[in-house]
Image (cartoon, rainbow, N blue to C red):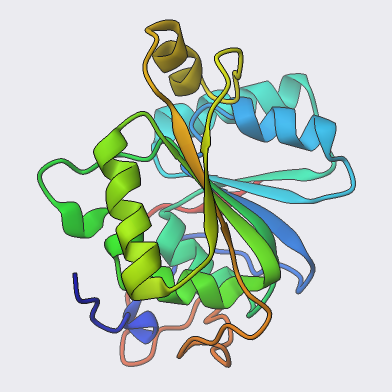
Length: 220
């Protein structure tokens, strides 16, 4: 399907937005209660992960888990992921990005991540050679994402069946316990890949032509 251009300059900053350093990061979108984030930070202590969750109840559950088991290499953010990333992230900053079991948006396919104009902006934040992991238990979601990667984004990827004993997220545990097929796409950004946002710097709380801010956002 055709993709219109993302209007990054029109995105409002999350409330209480805080700028972050220009350093190598890993990102998880829709981190839920933080099961994968805590596991990743435990297994990869030299890589700094920012776990983003919009739903307040899930964010507070993740925050509680982090307080019980602190991780210097893990930061958590309560905000809309698109708004936060537009204002916080620098070009080519992200080394790994995880989108694990996203909302399949059954009534609005345009809101699926690889169908959104924002995906081009997201690619501009990825470092050359960086990876994006997209996992789902819905075969049609994976099939559509593959079509977008082949025909729109023209990105290399590999398709993997997720092992039956994998337990990265609460959704993954539930789906595998029901013997559902869980799959993931490991997408790689090639060295010479270009987007229209490669020189777009983070807005850091400013919006061109707008002076109001929406969405709750905080980083811990």
